[in-house]
Image (cartoon, rainbow, N blue to C red; front, side, top):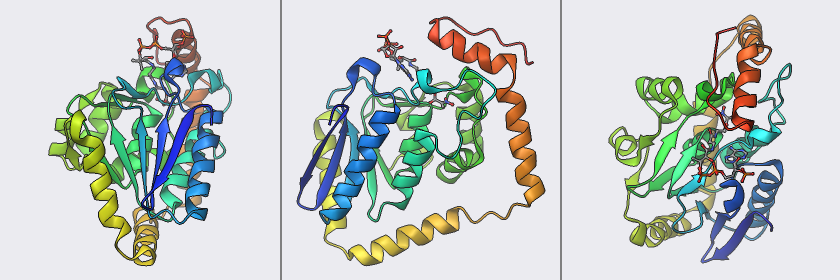
Length: 259
Ligand code: KGA
């Protein structure tokens, strides 16, 4: 594994993001490794998984690998996009996935953490939802992840400002389960996972799947879906979208004109 480390012990599988050079950007190869690790965990009878970065990381993940986003004219978050694929794998994994968060969580990684079944974070952890910073039209299931994890006003503050929010604030709103000091977070999270491993794996798997289906049970008309796709297309066809991606690559602040 080039970008991750995996470990199994006491029916707990741990995936450690390990690509410091790119601040654990969720690139296609990294996502492939995580998906393969989850498959391996399933085959090995893992009953709870932990998704973390290296201990002491200042960045948990910088989010979608921006170099893999199209420059325009194409949906940047289509069905087969690595981030979309990863979120589906976490949601459909047979056992609970606990995000253990140290450091900054950015963009698509914020959604990834919110899609996990529980979140344990250090006091220094921060969470930023960045599509508005990049000019990206976030997709409907992605927005639903935010709405299912956060109260609407907090989801909107995250999405509209793009500003990092502290773990303490997210804990206050029930988005983060527990804020735990860095020295204790690994033991704390393993203990939580251990409780899960002693319960009925079948009952948990079925409840997790029911909760997933219930959380996604929003009726939408074909016209409504096509309207959303049409609105999003206006954004990824826009000059602003291209500007956001170019500015990131050129390491400068984007200038948005709303067209
Ligand atoms: N994609 C690709 N490369 C990235 C990256 C990303 N998301 N984030 C960082 N890198 C690269 C960066 O270009 C640099 O490469 C290296 O990682 C170290 O970054 O060495 P190079 O070739 O120049 P940097 O910035 O020097 O590290 P830092 O000073 O420690 O700062 C860390 C952070 C995380 C604060 C900084 O890298 C940053 O702001 N990254 C972008 C965070 C972000 O906005 N992510 C959102 C991605 O979009 C996303 O998920 C979606 C789809 N969305 O929001 O809609």
